[in-house]
Length: 204
Image 1 (spheres, rainbow, N blue to C red):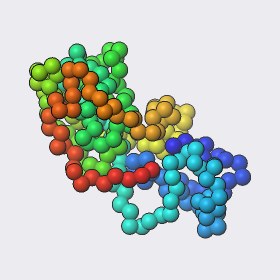
Image 2: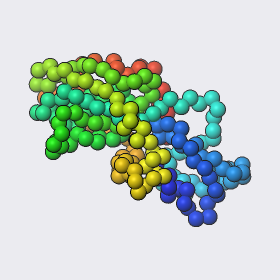
Image 3: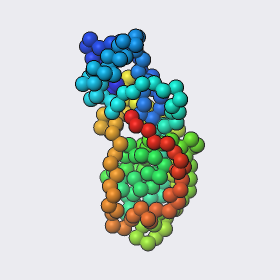
Image 4: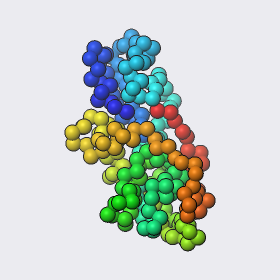
């Protein structure tokens, strides 16, 4: 979602963009004619920046948000991106693997950015099984960091935003691998009923 590039197209109608949560933006036009032109004729301009544009629906409920999740307790010998993906995907769709590289000097916790519709504060104690050994873990949301992950910050404050590079690289959700790594698998991770089963999914 490269909002700045979208707004600065020469000769394009003047628009105002407002952040709605998650990966969604509200695009406001000065006239209905300009709106219809963009939706029907100018797809080649907005398509590189957005997955889709559609008419505003006042009945739509915007509960999707971006959450920065801290994971404490992952053993060093199991420290890999696949483990953090497995732990956090029950809360939502993983879009940023921030502090989980194996060469990280800080192995006290890993940080993952997710797209979620969970309405409450994410905070749980659970366990994972690695090579038949159970380890206790803590999954906790970082509210302050979650607010920094807003696409508005990344797109409208390109110079100072700490998330600039993240959003240029990871605006598409990370594709999760179906195959399990040796030593840990989806079936090994306990407590996977964290995320509400009725959470809605939305297109962006």
